[in-house]
Image (tube, rainbow, N blue to C red):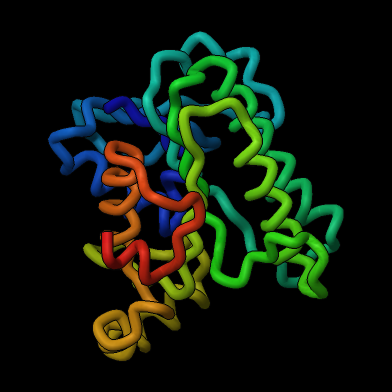
Length: 219
């Protein structure tokens, strides 16, 4: 399986990249981002790209892939709906639309979040935007699209959040997060479990298109 990975330098993306590089079924990984991953591995190739709305300059390098793991994401805190929609909906659909044209047999997996509003009508702005993003991804001419909706995600294996205050919380709360992952899989998963589940779903499929934390952990 050949994989394209967006967001490889973020916390979730780092975890997904680690599992891809460790998995014998993953032949190669193309990490698309504004900065290099800093990881050296024979299976990994970085491609630097600044315009996440236009991929025409690198389209030839995006063809021939079996799966895309889309792990880009931003917090909606302090952000207008217009700005959040641009960074969430516009960027995700631009990538997915391009990839669906270049790789119609591709499986596209999008990291969204618990509480996403599939009706697009709820009072929470971020949930409405995420819901529209999910809904429109599912309409694209792909082999399949899956929405991963984790609640809390515990970083493992030295993976760190790029946001200092978030990382500080993870460090302090690590023992509690480990316990929650064991006793409350509805509310907690890990970067390792997310990565392993993505690979398995891309390879084998799943009975439903939207996966919550408990589904991710069970896989």
